[in-house]
Image (cartoon, rainbow, N blue to C red; front, side, top):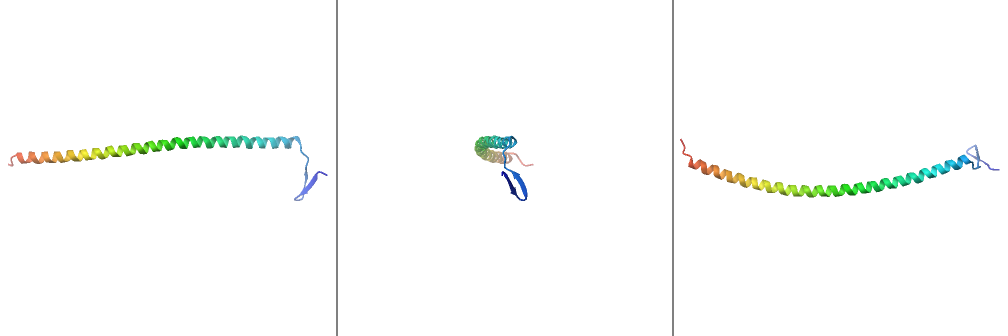
Amino acid sequence: MSDQKHFGMDIDMKMSLGNMITIGTLLATIVFGWANFRSDIEANRLATAANTSRIERLEIQSGEMKDRLTRMEVTLQNVSVQIDRAVRLLEKDVPQP
């Protein structure tokens, strides 16, 4: 007898063509899903590596820009000091009314 009783239901234990097609479809879906999942992981890994290198480049450029801005600030301060000195000299030479 190939019938069994589980939870009050009669279950036929015969394997039919429909059962085999269903099992094959499920197995194919699992295999293709897993392959797709793995390819997505690899694509994400490559994108992460590209983004990491881009971030590192931007950090280097930011540091270089900060250095340039600091040099410009020092230059502007020096120019400001020289202009103040020139204004003071010119004010001394101008007769007061």
